[in-house]
Length: 99
Image (cartoon, rainbow, N blue to C red; front, side):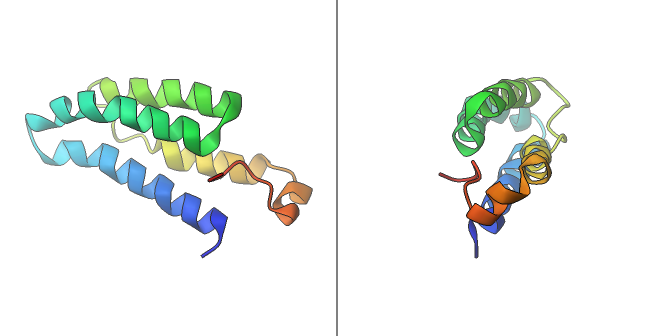
């Protein structure tokens, strides 16, 4: 498994964990209070730089606000990062995914 596949898998798992809070009525919003800062930190560490900082803030807000957990912010950012990075960077393997 290459770095890109591993980082995509991590992104999908993080989105599923964030969405899973809907599965437990009543406990879901409490779990968001715990998961939101963890998710934001993972987002920043995974993507780094200004994209990671901005995305981490957005991800924190998305997790902490009620009824917004369905947004797959990690996967959206992975797709954006993958398709906007230059071809030469992809060939050299110097993407910001999982450092």
